[in-house]
Image 1 (cartoon, rainbow, N blue to C red):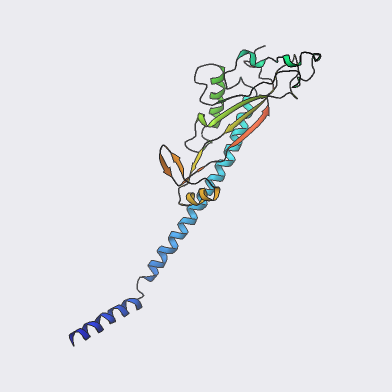
Image 2 (cartoon, helix red, strand yellow):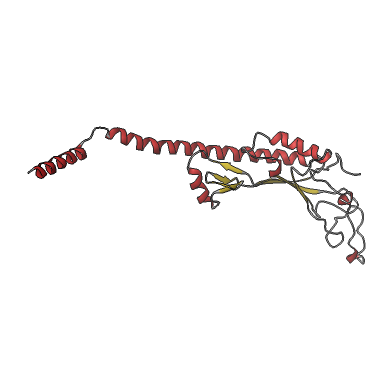
Length: 229
């Protein structure tokens, strides 16, 4: 008899518990609020990403415009500026002054490249990097440094000519930059971009993604400032 009463009492309490609706509004509010905050912070995160993309694009353009009228940001050997006649084509008559320095006449010049932190010693190269970094600093995602800047100087046979000034294509690139989300959507964005969690200093951060690499190339105007005569 006692067991039956206990069973009925327990069943009554459980039935009442499942039928009780007090506090359901608070639970529903908590669930909806969590989803709402996730969407809000996600919009803020992707807004920050779009903002940095636009500002970095403008900063790279400014950096390239400065680089084409300043001494190279990389240390340059003296013979880098000189066109050398290819000895393998010695039987080819040398072109007249002003002719294009074609690849079958002149030696191919290697691309001169370096990172922004390579110009540590005082000099024209460091001055160029300092001026460019002054413009770009503050426009890049947090954690960016001079080491994320890459400068490349490439000869273009269609722009230079034998015996005349050396004309190069100057490329400024921002690469290996990470962008950190403040919401868990960063992990989903990383999966969508195929990058996955970013490993920094031996620690994996699922809210970091690789920022898109951006570069701008312009023909050097003359590089007269600091260029050998």
